Length: 174
Image (cartoon, rainbow, N blue to C red; front, top):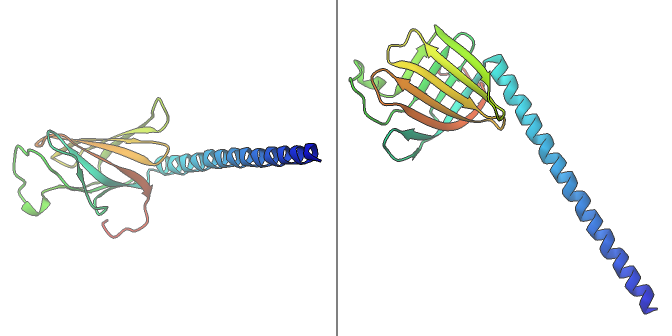
């Protein structure tokens, strides 16, 4: 009788252990499926050249990292680039219009080059031709949707932003 109870307890333990391993394997597959779906979604946005980079943190040259509100973004479309980003750092010349203190511009004439990153994701180089102050924008987008933007300027120190890429939803700033 004791032998039978011991055997049934062992069987029950093995059943629970197997069930737990099965759930863990399903969770791992589900996580990989979600990552693959997210990567496909981000690739679609990059290929369509129609997305918004939403800045979360600012990395000014020689200053501390700052968290910012999600109101600041860079909108990318095939026919235009619209930047509404803050600027912290040294400016070598003052802007003519003081209300345009950040990196605020709209470009309709620009170079746009996409290359695949070595470890997945995309490196995007944008060179506005009709904006005097901004020399280039280097946007590194990862398959997870997170992104890193570096802005090189003619009249200011370089600045970088961490954030994420999402689909363009509203056109209120265009």
